[in-house]
Length: 269
Image (tube, rainbow, N blue to C red; front, side, top):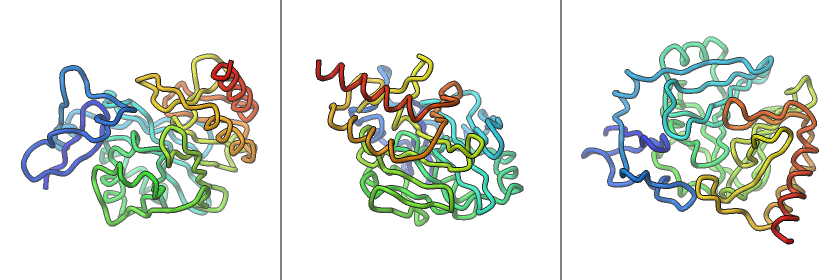
């Protein structure tokens, strides 16, 4: 069985007879098939041309990206804690140096994902790091492009991964879209890792919410109102988004509430 990686979104797929005919992630209305058509890269080829970059964002939080960028270009975030380490979101490539560094830090207890666009290499990461459980909301299992015995479905709106590290299913972008609450982040004031379940935008101190970001399909007001209500019950002061520049360093909880009010007002005006 060969592993093929979608050049457009980074999703991994298995095939016995060459590249798959299509990428189910790109084929969904929230993403897109490039104008030139679907292109695939053999995993072995990508491993020889790409590597991971590694940046400490604050004590016990590490950003792991891919250089040169491939697919959507998101980063993964490695949260370190005395109870074990957690990987938030994933990228298409895991090089040997990064694997060894993670193992030196004690490995990881779980892989948690914000939504299917960032599932990418989750199975490869799990296997390379010793069969790490991949925690996925039941609602989004249909979007898995490479199955694994290590996938652990969960139900409900809240899942404690480790003490002080909790998944919250907010929905919106996908039915199972999640954020990760890290209580020890932001100097013990709490940090929220959001993928693009909540999107940090260029205007300082603001976020947004969308059904599709590249295709500019908004969420209905009722969904944004529900998400804002859920987030209001989480204690946090900082937000880390899916890309390097996507950070709200302080007063992020207020930013989400203010942004949701603006979004709803514009939809209902």
